[in-house]
Image (tube, rainbow, N blue to C red; front, side):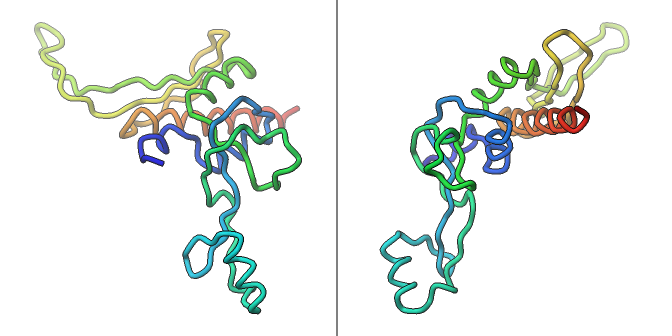
Amino acid sequence: MEEEKKLKLCSYPISMQLKKLGFNEPCDYLYTTAIRHNGEDLGSDEQFELEAEGHGDEIEYVPGGWLEEHYNCNDFDYFSDETCSAPLLNDVVDWLEKEHGLIINATPSFGIEFDEEYGIKSVNALMGWHTIVYYADGQKPLYIMDIRKNRYEAIANGVEEALELLKLENEDN
Protein backbone atom coordinates (compact mmCIF):
# COMPACT_ATOMS: atom_id res chain seq x y z
CA MET A 1 0.00 0.00 0.00
CA GLU A 2 1.36 3.42 -0.90
CA GLU A 3 2.37 5.80 1.89
CA GLU A 4 -0.20 8.44 0.93
CA LYS A 5 -3.03 5.95 1.48
CA LYS A 6 -1.60 4.97 4.87
CA LEU A 7 -1.62 8.65 5.89
CA LYS A 8 -5.37 8.74 5.24
CA LEU A 9 -6.11 5.68 7.42
CA CYS A 10 -6.65 5.70 11.16
CA SER A 11 -3.86 4.14 13.18
CA TYR A 12 -4.38 0.76 14.83
CA PRO A 13 -4.88 2.24 18.35
CA ILE A 14 -7.49 4.72 17.07
CA SER A 15 -9.21 1.95 15.06
CA MET A 16 -9.44 -0.24 18.18
CA GLN A 17 -10.99 2.64 20.16
CA LEU A 18 -13.50 3.20 17.38
CA LYS A 19 -14.42 -0.49 17.38
CA LYS A 20 -15.13 -0.26 21.14
CA LEU A 21 -17.31 2.81 20.54
CA GLY A 22 -19.39 0.93 17.96
CA PHE A 23 -17.88 2.21 14.72
CA ASN A 24 -19.20 -0.13 12.05
CA GLU A 25 -19.07 1.76 8.78
CA PRO A 26 -17.89 0.17 5.51
CA CYS A 27 -14.08 0.06 5.23
CA ASP A 28 -11.67 -1.25 2.62
CA TYR A 29 -8.91 -2.29 5.06
CA LEU A 30 -8.47 -4.02 8.38
CA TYR A 31 -5.76 -4.42 10.98
CA THR A 32 -5.00 -7.95 12.06
CA THR A 33 -2.32 -9.71 14.08
CA ALA A 34 1.04 -10.01 12.38
CA ILE A 35 2.92 -13.28 12.81
CA ARG A 36 6.68 -12.73 12.79
CA HIS A 37 9.90 -14.63 13.31
CA ASN A 38 13.20 -12.73 13.65
CA GLY A 39 11.47 -9.56 12.47
CA GLU A 40 10.15 -11.15 9.25
CA ASP A 41 6.44 -11.63 8.51
CA LEU A 42 5.37 -15.26 8.28
CA GLY A 43 2.65 -16.91 6.28
CA SER A 44 0.56 -19.62 7.94
CA ASP A 45 2.62 -22.42 6.30
CA GLU A 46 5.85 -20.97 7.72
CA GLN A 47 4.20 -20.56 11.12
CA PHE A 48 3.06 -24.21 11.19
CA GLU A 49 6.50 -25.35 10.02
CA LEU A 50 8.25 -23.50 12.85
CA GLU A 51 5.77 -24.85 15.39
CA ALA A 52 6.26 -28.42 14.08
CA GLU A 53 10.03 -28.00 14.41
CA GLY A 54 9.63 -26.97 18.06
CA HIS A 55 10.33 -23.28 17.49
CA GLY A 56 6.83 -22.00 18.27
CA ASP A 57 8.16 -20.00 21.22
CA GLU A 58 10.23 -17.92 18.78
CA ILE A 59 7.13 -16.70 16.96
CA GLU A 60 6.02 -13.15 17.76
CA TYR A 61 2.36 -12.12 17.52
CA VAL A 62 1.89 -8.38 16.97
CA PRO A 63 -1.72 -7.13 17.28
CA GLY A 64 -2.47 -4.63 14.52
CA GLY A 65 0.82 -5.43 12.81
CA TRP A 66 -0.73 -6.26 9.45
CA LEU A 67 -2.84 -3.96 7.34
CA GLU A 68 -4.86 -5.95 4.84
CA GLU A 69 -7.28 -5.07 2.09
CA HIS A 70 -10.59 -6.43 3.32
CA TYR A 71 -14.17 -5.48 4.05
CA ASN A 72 -15.46 -4.01 7.31
CA CYS A 73 -14.89 -6.48 10.13
CA ASN A 74 -16.02 -4.79 13.35
CA ASP A 75 -19.32 -6.66 13.52
CA PHE A 76 -18.06 -10.18 12.77
CA ASP A 77 -17.31 -12.65 15.57
CA TYR A 78 -15.09 -14.57 13.14
CA PHE A 79 -12.20 -12.16 13.70
CA SER A 80 -10.09 -12.02 16.85
CA ASP A 81 -10.50 -9.29 19.45
CA GLU A 82 -7.27 -7.68 18.18
CA THR A 83 -8.61 -7.40 14.62
CA CYS A 84 -10.46 -4.25 13.62
CA SER A 85 -11.49 -2.24 10.59
CA ALA A 86 -8.99 0.40 9.39
CA PRO A 87 -11.21 3.32 8.40
CA LEU A 88 -10.24 6.42 6.47
CA LEU A 89 -9.84 9.49 8.69
CA ASN A 90 -12.48 11.41 6.73
CA ASP A 91 -15.01 8.60 7.26
CA VAL A 92 -14.36 8.75 11.01
CA VAL A 93 -14.76 12.54 11.01
CA ASP A 94 -18.18 12.08 9.33
CA TRP A 95 -19.14 9.32 11.80
CA LEU A 96 -18.14 11.37 14.86
CA GLU A 97 -20.32 14.23 13.67
CA LYS A 98 -23.30 12.00 12.80
CA GLU A 99 -23.18 9.73 15.87
CA HIS A 100 -21.70 11.98 18.56
CA GLY A 101 -22.18 15.57 17.38
CA LEU A 102 -18.43 16.26 17.36
CA ILE A 103 -16.91 18.26 14.53
CA ILE A 104 -13.22 18.07 13.67
CA ASN A 105 -11.77 20.79 11.51
CA ALA A 106 -8.21 21.04 10.17
CA THR A 107 -7.32 24.59 9.17
CA PRO A 108 -4.20 25.76 7.33
CA SER A 109 -1.89 28.16 9.13
CA PHE A 110 0.15 30.72 7.18
CA GLY A 111 2.92 33.02 8.26
CA ILE A 112 1.61 36.59 8.16
CA GLU A 113 3.60 39.83 8.27
CA PHE A 114 1.82 42.86 9.68
CA ASP A 115 2.29 46.53 8.87
CA GLU A 116 1.31 48.94 11.68
CA GLU A 117 -0.32 51.39 9.29
CA TYR A 118 -2.07 49.03 6.83
CA GLY A 119 -2.56 45.79 8.74
CA ILE A 120 -1.60 42.65 6.88
CA LYS A 121 1.51 43.24 4.79
CA SER A 122 1.99 39.76 3.30
CA VAL A 123 0.96 36.13 3.66
CA ASN A 124 3.86 33.71 3.58
CA ALA A 125 4.05 30.00 2.91
CA LEU A 126 1.93 27.40 4.67
CA MET A 127 3.39 26.72 8.13
CA GLY A 128 1.21 23.75 9.02
CA TRP A 129 -2.29 22.81 10.13
CA HIS A 130 -4.33 23.59 13.28
CA THR A 131 -7.03 21.26 14.56
CA ILE A 132 -10.25 22.42 16.19
CA VAL A 133 -12.73 20.03 17.84
CA TYR A 134 -16.16 21.34 18.80
CA TYR A 135 -19.76 20.21 19.25
CA ALA A 136 -22.12 20.61 16.31
CA ASP A 137 -24.62 22.49 18.51
CA GLY A 138 -22.40 25.57 18.34
CA GLN A 139 -20.68 25.45 21.72
CA LYS A 140 -17.23 26.96 21.97
CA PRO A 141 -14.31 24.87 20.72
CA LEU A 142 -13.40 22.03 23.04
CA TYR A 143 -9.87 21.70 21.77
CA ILE A 144 -7.49 23.73 19.64
CA MET A 145 -4.24 22.02 18.75
CA ASP A 146 -0.79 23.27 17.92
CA ILE A 147 0.43 23.20 14.35
CA ARG A 148 0.86 19.80 12.66
CA LYS A 149 2.89 19.22 9.50
CA ASN A 150 0.06 18.01 7.25
CA ARG A 151 -3.73 17.89 7.11
CA TYR A 152 -3.96 14.17 7.79
CA GLU A 153 -1.81 14.41 10.90
CA ALA A 154 -3.99 17.29 12.13
CA ILE A 155 -7.18 15.30 11.48
CA ALA A 156 -5.74 12.19 13.17
CA ASN A 157 -4.85 14.22 16.25
CA GLY A 158 -8.34 15.74 16.24
CA VAL A 159 -9.87 12.25 16.09
CA GLU A 160 -7.68 11.17 19.04
CA GLU A 161 -8.83 14.18 21.05
CA ALA A 162 -12.50 13.58 20.16
CA LEU A 163 -12.20 9.94 21.28
CA GLU A 164 -10.62 11.09 24.55
CA LEU A 165 -13.56 13.49 25.09
CA LEU A 166 -16.04 10.67 24.44
CA LYS A 167 -14.15 8.40 26.84
CA LEU A 168 -14.36 11.04 29.58
CA GLU A 169 -18.07 11.54 28.89
CA ASN A 170 -18.67 7.78 29.17
CA GLU A 171 -16.78 7.68 32.48
CA ASP A 172 -18.93 10.51 33.87
CA ASN A 173 -22.19 8.69 32.95
